[in-house]
Image (tube, rainbow, N blue to C red; front, side, top):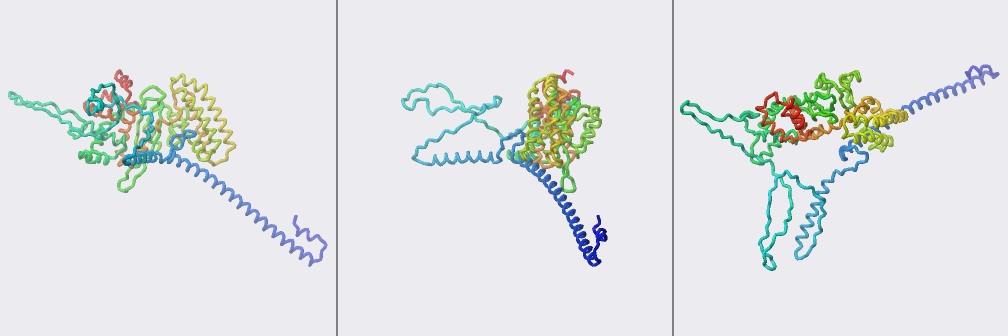
Length: 543
């Protein structure tokens, strides 16, 4: 309805119509301005609401990230549902308490003429010292063999034995090889025993010293300058350039063993895979660039040797994984990194079939619960905990029995968990940490449930993460890799030493023995030198 048009039909004099028309026009203009103001305010309100919602989501994400960082920095790394928070100053407190007790004892001893009864220190049950350690006996006899009161001879009635643990620092010694030379006067020839073969011909270092250097660098993560300082304390001069030369030459000698381990690893049909960033020196720029140490691990739920293989690459592209795996076919357990996705193209018909890691799924909900005590996250953790409880029950079963257990218990639990996630997601707002945690599980669901269809597939990727963790921590000592060649050499040596640990071998003892045998060992029997379990080595010998 147009008020001005209706005004023309009214029976008013012209002046009154003009005045009324002016008032109506003013009111219409005011109403239009008010409507525009209202629309503007509504738009601003919607924008502010959207901004507030975005900020709320950002605050939630930052709170979650902060809680995760605090847990990693100050708390235990375990993802138990209700862990006891470890105090960062616990070690200092124990040290200070012991120092205070010692000072009190000293003050008590200094009080001359006073009889002070020292309280008996509480002692926890001490573990017995290992039987394989050599014992050095110290016998403490009384100053005399007669009684101090009556003068009669003392009779031995028993012994009080206490043991203390001691250690010697690196002990250097010299092997002197003496080769007598014998002459035949008739033939005019000289005969002498041949020079013992060595990994480094004519080198200064014996196999024990070479093993000490490699264990220090790649197991204890000590830079060579620290090993140089340790030797200097024993008045032994070992320059860094000499140590570096030994590491380079031994690395080349050991590389065929690492390559052979990689071959054995790829004979299995299930692998774990993970990667960790490593700083690599960028010559000329004075800076470092990011490279990656890829790790591939055998499946503990299947028979066969336990093997960990490291592959150093200049980047994180999925092409590096494809290059390492080659024509390998089987189940590959990985996280949600996109570089692996090309390997899984084709789903169950692909050469590589994806396995999801339940530990990563659980971590999303654990961080959420730690950040804000989310009841939804707690419920998810309890449901996932049921899956792990079933795995703990079947840990010592064979593959067929474990398959039956999973069919009877794991698969129904997984179906119930999926239904619960779907229903919960409908009631959860988009964009928040809760929605992201649920979406992460639902997006990877086909890969996450594959393990329950068999008895040999693992539920998570924890074993390879545990194997790669010492290197991730150790790089805080050596800071960066000097070159790509150095990275590949480190990967080969870490492959051998890491596999030795997995098979219950002492890496130092295995390395020393192998370096002694390697110079004259036939290549056709190279498998016998690998750091694998003795029973598997015997199997290889029979083949």
